[in-house]
Amino acid sequence: MLSTKHHPIKIKIKTTTTETQINKQNNKKERKEERSGTKAKLAMASTSLLSPSQLIYSSSRSISQLCVFGSKAFLSCPATATTTTTSHHGSKRRPVHLGLGVRCMAVAAEAETTKRSGYELQTLTGWLLKQEQAGVIDAELTIVLSSISMACKQIAALVQRASISNLTGVQGAVNVQGEDQKKLDVVSNEVFSNCLRSSGRTGIIASEEEDVPVAVEESYSGNYIVVFDPLDGSSNIDAAVSTGSIFGIYSPNDECFADIGDDPTLGTTEQRCVVNVCQPGSNLLAAGYCMYSSSIIFVLTIGNGVFSFTLDPTYGEFVLTQKNIQIPKAGKIYAFNEGNYQLWDDKLKKYIDDLKDPGPSGKPYSARYIGSLVGDFHRTLLYGGIYGYPRDKKSKNGKLRLLYECAPMSFIVEQAGGKGSDGHQRILDIQPVEIHQRVPLYIGSQEEVDKLEKYLA
Image (cartoon, rainbow, N blue to C red):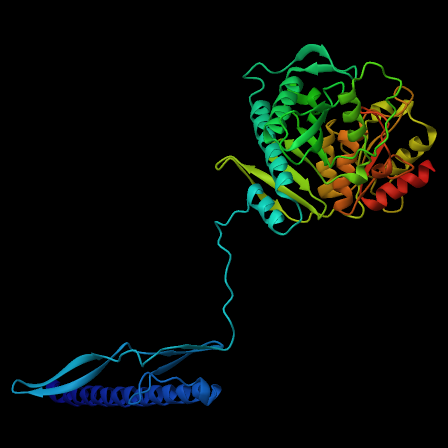
């Protein structure tokens, strides 16, 4: 009884399994036919996208397989064909080279764009050579700028090892400005001067640390005039705060006027040097600065924009990191030494007070002051705002030197779309009357400097 009861169940299970297998086979067959039909439709659709002139065949007997990837169509052409040969051993297929008459080509609807390599670096030397090839600068100026970059590398190494090498503290001498010379001031000046002399392309060099400009006897050609502050902000050295070097490059100018007639201590050569060096900033051919901070940054303009290079310690080269820097038209940062507030005139005090007033926006300006012109200027160049070192009751003309601080920085900021002023006129229009002439400086975003000039008018 048990076997007869379960017998129909067994038959039912077997029947169900057989039907399932048949259904699977039918479904597999249908899917295969669908795939074949899809491939055929895809090939026909791909072929219809191409004009007859774009169809390329690998031989007259067989058509190569057409593949379409996005908007690009390719013909994959085999390098060999097969032929069938018959011998007493039977039929055999062997590959045959198609020969030079067969050519495979890729048909593309659009040209491929070449990607820039992630390892491609634009060094300062390479950039200068490109500017020379383009006719922006000549070979002599290229050599001068390369010499300055080498001086900056050496000074950067000295600054980084100042404490280790016992280069902190005061040298014991006083420079022509009446300022105590730091040890690094003296060393940096020597490094800068030696690099410029060895270039053979400078005729006259003028430094903050020298009483008068110096004629370079080793000049072979070029005769460029280089003015520089070898180490700006050296009072910050002992505290390892940002410092920098500033430079400007002029061409010789014998038509320049300087008040040197009443100075009997100057010889003929020194008089010629003074006359050549005393040029307005509008005559500058190139200017720049190197900031020694968490990174060593070399900022340069040759009259066609401002470019920034960062020293890569791996290669020992300055690498281009920012092109055509543009200072913001306005900013909310001001950099003034407010410790001298009580010594300023009332118009300037009113200007500073208004910057601190939150006004309708509820946001006053932010005060940021490092005490190093290079550091404060670099921040202003990138973030916008204004930097100022005004005249006061102690310093009737301020403290910054026109020739190798104010003029080069103003040349840079104007190339970046900003403005440099003494409060009443453009810095680059001021004609120097002495080498170490001082002027007030207000420099930064165009709108911020314009605003200050209205207060001081």
